[in-house]
Amino acid sequence: MPVQPNITAMPQAQPRPTQHVRTLLGLVLLAGLALPYLAYWWADSATTERLREAGAQRLEVYATSLENLLDKYDLIPRMLELDKDVVQLLEHPGDEDVRNSVNEYLEGLNKKAESSNIYIVNLQGRTQAASNWRQKDSFIGDDVNFRPYIRNALRGRPGGFYGVGTTSLEPGYFYAHGIYKDGRMLGVAAIKVSIENQQRSWTQGSDKVALVDPNGVIFLSSDPEWKFKALRPLSANVRAELEQTRQYFAQALPPLTLKHDEALANGDRLLMIRNSNAPGAASTPLMLAQTRSLAPRDWTFIYMSDLNAARGNASLAFLFALLAYGFLILLFLYWRQRLRAKEELERMVAERTASLARMTQDLSKEVDVRRQAEQQLQITQNELFQAGKLAVLGQMSASITHELNQPLTALRTMSDNAVLLFERGRMDDVRNNLKTISQVVARMGTITGKLKGFARKSNAELGPVSIHTSISNALVLVERRIQLDKVTFQLRIDKADIYALCDSNRLEQVLLNLMTNALDSMAGCAVRELVLEVSSKPGRVLIRVADSGPGLSDEARERLFEPFYTSKPQGEGLGLGLAISEQIIRDFGGSLRAEQASTGACFVIELKEAQET
Image (tube, rainbow, N blue to C red; front, side, top):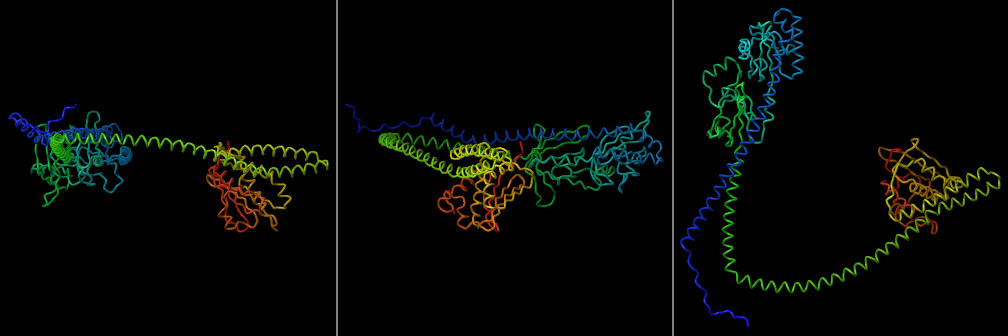
């Protein structure tokens, strides 16, 4: 017998936590509290480092792009030293023909180089020729000796200079190089290039990019508010020098207000800049500022990365770590609760096991029921499939009976004609008539094959078909009846031949059916006219079959393509012709419809146009 549990035994008292356990729990609590702060520090450091790397890469790209642009234009003043007309102009400044020649040359060179201006200066610093000589604000005759790049070039030190034009008031980069002949300086060639477009590619979300001169003046920036402002207040000596060189002309060059400026160990800085000194002016978020020097121009690129993303990621990491710690505490409490509920869990497991056993038994019964249902379903499906086959055989038999009735009528007419022609001794006509009968018999075989294919819903391959040929073949079967019924027939084709994407045999069936229906509808009418018109529009071919009969009633128009519906007397039609014809044209990717006509009925076949192969 199984041993019965001792229900009278009292539960043993749990020992109190020892000092070691309490110490361990305290360390775990402290580690859990420190975890969010460590996560914040790690996320902030990692995101800031990624921003620093991205900023350094963008600085390198911007600097390289600007240096390549300026180096390309630095070669143009050096090249002008080789032009003999430029040298002759500086030697003979009074020669107006040479001056005009140089002006035109500089104008064409400036257009090809896509620079702002190119000009020639004599040793006194006065412009002798310029690419803008045709304009009202031409540089010719201007004294530019006050510009540092001109003075340096006249002293034999070619160099560049960024400043605002005193004539055009447009900023640009100026570069000047001396023009020599036999070691003797004759003058200076200078070029002005606009680099304003460079700052358009510097926009990177909330990040800022600035290009600063040696005096700390921002002359290019992705933020328009910073342009022509100084990173620090300019001294009186610097302002006097700028006033003398007119580098920034009438710009006031106010300083930006640094709300926060902190130097980092790696040389970067943390900045927060106020755009203006006005009360309540907006400030940038805390930015990580990285610099790159552009020697020998002594410019400095500054890239400022928005640290809001880093602070946001760090805050998310802090929150996630805090939630994770809270989750661990809840997990621990849950584990303790699970231990206390162990007996209850075992009871529930036992109940669940019994329930699962009952469910398994019920599922076995349900599987047997479903297996029987599947067997019955298979039997029903087989019966439905057999019924479907019988329906298809019935449809095919009716279609063959309808489609072969017209060719058989034509054969009977042609046979009677052959007998009459034979009696009259017209052997050539008899021979031609017999050939036609042979073609009709062959076409009947083709019709049965096509109708069987149609009944099986086969996918016949479509190709370019001559509409002219199809109409001719269909007319062979009805032309005798047209003559006997004294019907006026008109064929209108706007081109020599048109090709449509379809099957020739089935298209001839549709044409034959429409023309036969038209002839049947005009029986007993005083005026009998049958018009077959072919036209085309972009990508489509239209075939109209119109008659002068009584037309279509409202009921007939609504049920026009309904199988087994016919307006003919009983015994003269099965009502399948138009239904089959509409299905054939739809298989071609076209449409068959009835149009409103003033007299009679008009059916339109619309097909896809094809190219002749």
